[in-house]
Image 1 (cartoon, rainbow, N blue to C red):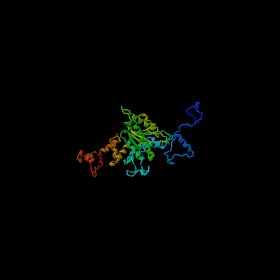
Image 2: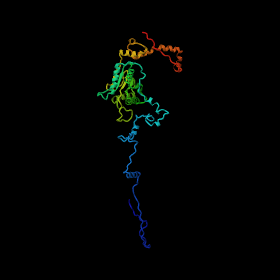
Image 3: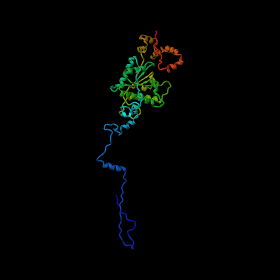
Image 4: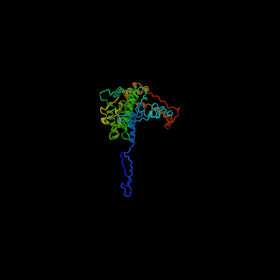
Length: 395
């Protein structure tokens, strides 16, 4: 603070005709200092309260919502930044929040189709009956699945993909589904039609999402699971002058990356050290794997299994197929020998043709093809469709 003494503006020496009078010189002070800011005032208040500092109030001493990571970000920040967080059903589900906010007028879950939309796995309750599983096929598929679940205990390189290939109609998919049912596996099944899209990158992302879904089945439900892609050569194979698209390249690269890093799968979110995906095997079927990109089907990534059923396998499978028609095994042997070198689907089509004569007779009995619509779709509730008995087979 500076003090200045300022005189009046008139001169201190007076003319001679005025008497000399000593006038007092007034003085006043001017204070000069820097401008005080609100932050400085706040700091002064903080300094005055250093003896009794106040800690920020926490929700709970055991709450992890306010826990900071190494970068100083809390749980809510990380949860919102992760792209794979799609917890749309956590909002109003019984047991997750207070029951006061869930209500009973629409049920306990606000999202009534959540269970159906999230059911991406396949169950095989429709496979009723005693079907035959070829021992060689069972040994190959079961061994591949077990090896992948024990890969962390084995000091060897385990191929993630099992490629089952062979002729058309040989029962590759059906035999695999029978093995899944016998082993209690809930697989995630894809087809070749999902390996192409009008938007680039969608099929590759879909494969990674389905793979993570199979991994979550293992983690959350405690059941074995796997990813199965049917007829992969129809979606990725190159035949003649077919054009290779961007999605074909991305799908091939995705499968190669899954084979090399089966526990680190990203669907667009930031990489996290704790984001470890359970390793689940991949099984693909096809007719000709020579049309697929060669580095994908090499031994380190894919184990190939050529399925060609023997005559004994065909007889046993066809016998179980015809068992409901009271056809003995000897008669099945006669059928197989009468039509040799046929795929398994041929004998299935042969069985379905045995009902053609009975169906044609029923169409004539109802008055012709003009009345089929009313009989099949417009019938009354108490009106039943005819019951067909298996025809008698005469050899």
